[in-house]
Image (cartoon, rainbow, N blue to C red):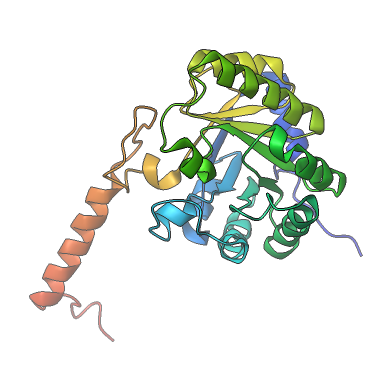
Amino acid sequence: MSVHVQNSRMTTAKIRQMKANGEKIAMLTGYDYTLASLTDEAGIDMILVGDSASNVVCGNQYTLPITVDEMIFLTKGVVRAAQHALVVCDMPFGSYQISEEEAVRNAVKILKESGCDAVKLEGGEEILPAIRHMIQAGVPVMGHLGLTPQSVNQFGGYGLRAKEDAEAEKLIHDARLLDQAGCFSIVLEKIPAALAEKVTKAVSCPVIGIGAGAGCDGQVLVLHDMLGLNQGFKPKFLRHFASLAGEVKNAVGEYINTVKDGSFPSAEESY
Ligand code: KIV
């Protein structure tokens, strides 16, 4: 029996090839079937089921509380939606830092149970052994350097990272190690644009930026932020490509009014 695999589906090899071709890579986060379907139909290259789900879906202040099983639950819906995009699932805090064995076990569980194509992990040299073991086990890995929100308690906030030379040097060193270990791409979050451009040129794998300037191979944003669903959050790097918060509130307000004044449902909307 042969299984039909759609050849329009993105693969990690195609994502790498895009860098080689000088083609920019567009990634957005996704957390549910409906919005991920629209994002996929619009032609996005990669959908990241970010642990930012802890913030935008669950309402937590930090990304730390979300669990492996919660990430798998969300990722399953996104995988069902993605006909074209490569789906990457964030490994949550605590799922890869304890031991290499546990990291591989959790990565394999995420791939098997969610059906996603790859996982993303935050950190450099410290987590290199775990990354190497995952890649050896056949798990495609995306790295994440710069502002790594799972380390918020160490950083003491979400400010710009790698402003000082020592941190910038370590970041370049870490990016080279991730690249050599076989990561198929690396996210750089909230670092100076000049540094991100330097890293992008220094590594062979595609670099995806968020708050890291235009010199990266691609960009990622949190879907709810770029759609303007989260009115209270407007850092310098974020562009609102829509203002859906107002539209949602207007629609809900109109629904409430028509229910209260008895004009919904009408005779045409009744059986
Ligand atoms: O969790 C997330 O949404 C992310 C992106 C901001 C890169 O890691």
